[in-house]
Length: 66
Image 1 (cartoon, helix red, strand yellow):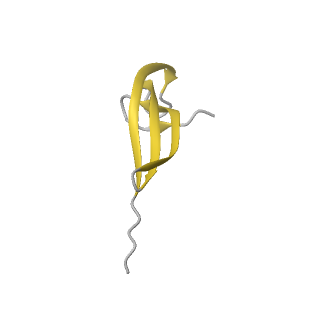
Image 2 (cartoon, one colour):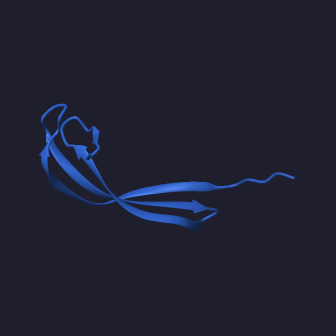
């Protein structure tokens, strides 16, 4: 007997907007992106969360706000 578990994580960008400040690595403009993440197990949603992530628009690094 063989059991196959199907787990999937889906991330989708909801909105993008410019954020205050500059990238500490290259000096580029910072973008704030609202990302919706969803975990599914056998097509049933288990976890749903919206996060705001910050990226540099020039060097494409993810920035962490401290």
